[in-house]
Image 1 (cartoon, rainbow, N blue to C red):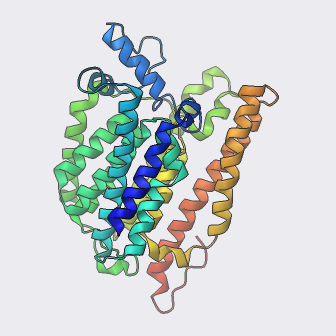
Image 2 (cartoon, helix red, strand yellow):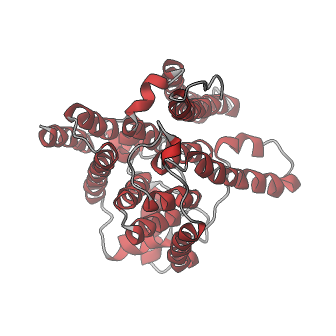
Image 3 (cartoon, helix red, strand yellow):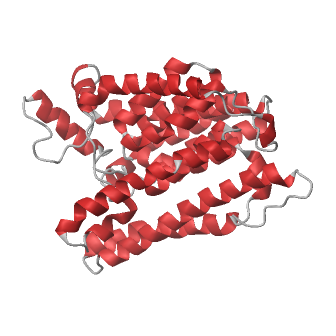
Length: 382
């Protein structure tokens, strides 16, 4: 039943590539960024094949390895890319399903169908895929790293994470919780944090050293990028001589979170990775809908959180509100010319608030599961 259901969903969503929808979406600012845009990737491959430096003009921002692969090993036609992107999403849904099975140690057909649907039919994941955003590749690499970490295949997991970091530099912050997941099993420990203890520091350091070794092999082709993200409007208002200082502050802001998240949630490293992924999706540079899409799709891995969520309806409504405002205000600003940057930035703030609310509510629910079972303890506020 599950296989038939998954196949039907996969075929239905893949049939959308045969419509004109991908052409309408390929330039959408909410679905693609300068680092994930398929049009810029195609332009970079063209310049690379003609012997020009693709990065001299500042238009192409994709990793050089992508240019090498699509100019030698794989064709870059729209039809082939559409098929490849659809397959990658199918692989991503399968990986998410396998992670759920390893975590729950049970088989629940309804929950498994829900997991497949939450990934393949999630608009935040489906629309970037139709736009041929390379964030689809990033999502599959992230889930592959989690899958192999859950199985204890440390080298394969760390290699997948290294390639993900090569494509999206902020993913380096996921190294600590994924390394911890390799040393543990993915079974849920949210309800009883005392059941697990943090592993020896030497074991963690060995895994992090192996990850950095893989990353060092790719370091010559990693191109660091600025971090406007949620703060892009701020950089339009400050004086130029203050720009490097604030750019450094906002870029290093994400480095605050990994250690506290791992220390507090180390008893359940899969949940810690989930929370950290949500934080990165909220504050990363050049976010697209695909980033919170992956985080919200991972909610299905933690059904025990749902009864403990405090404000799920406002969070969903905020996402729906921002999903309407973002394209509308972008069109008014860039298309009609009847709006300005304030319009689009207002919708950006609503979008950021929706992502933050989803992360905070999930974190509170996870902590409540741990403390709620202890007599005399009650989590009243986070």
